[in-house]
Amino acid sequence: MASNFEIAVVRNSNVSVLKLEGDFDATSAYELIYAIKKLPEEATRIVIHTSGLKSVYPFGVEVFQRFMQSLNGHSGRIAFTGNRVSQPAIESRSCPSERYRRHPKN
Image (cartoon, rainbow, N blue to C red; front, top):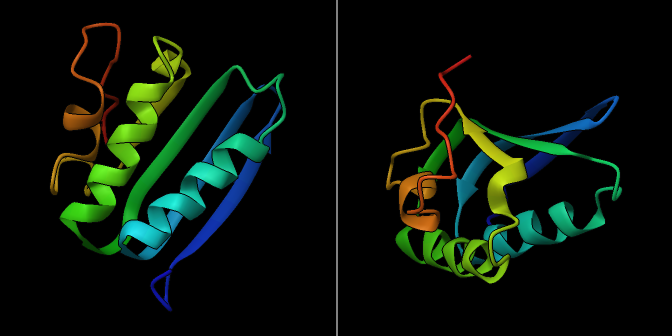
């Protein structure tokens, strides 16, 4: 994991917000995947906020994309916000289907 990567988890009723900080590399992607898997089953919505990311490395994005594709249609409960969503397109490359919606920056 990038030495400066952190995930802050905030839970509000059935929504879990994961705020990413630091550099997003492949190991950071695995940390994010693990954090998502640890969330309670009753979390009907997961919001990943990307504005705190300093650098986004292509291999980290690729690792996370593979995870999103493995969800087989269950990725609809995951939404991305923040100004780093499209650098390099964490969201659009990971979920090309129309069931996935982009959320505006907060």
